[in-house]
Image 1: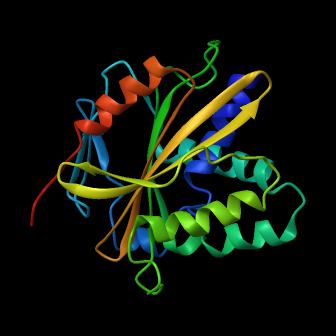
Image 2: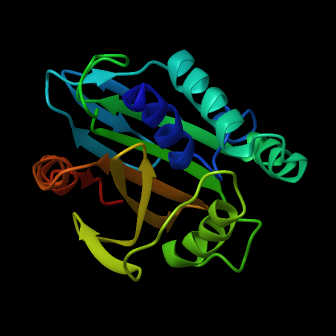
Length: 217
């Protein structure tokens, strides 16, 4: 039960400011596709190699996970629900992949997700850490208690600067940790999120991120 609950919450956290199917945004950018275990997105020029045995969720499943998790995070908070609803037109859930198929009876199911939100009409968001500022405030006002154990740092993925926010939450006796990578490009903030509980899981996910490549225009 902890694993199933964590999967819903984690995917929601991945899209906490990125809820919905992005009806307007998806007309401008593509969702991307996975072929031979490589996720490619033409708009961002992103290629990301996934382990061949990982379970990649289709668009319908990504939406279902996001909707279920949103209900868990927002609860009966009408203000939170309104914020998430307002973001639906400008956001796109691009990728969700788990080490094991959703529902597999394992202590925890490590994951990686990718999403994007249009921010060209938000001049105050110049880089990832500006976006993290708003994401953190929204998380702190929700129904789930989050901790932010480290200061925001900056890492490069294929030469591109990503600001990284560390998040953790306790579910039962387990502590789930996440790293949010955010970079503003082409009028959007691109978010990559990894979720894990152990150092080995974190190391495996870091290898996936380190293999990311961006097509230089």
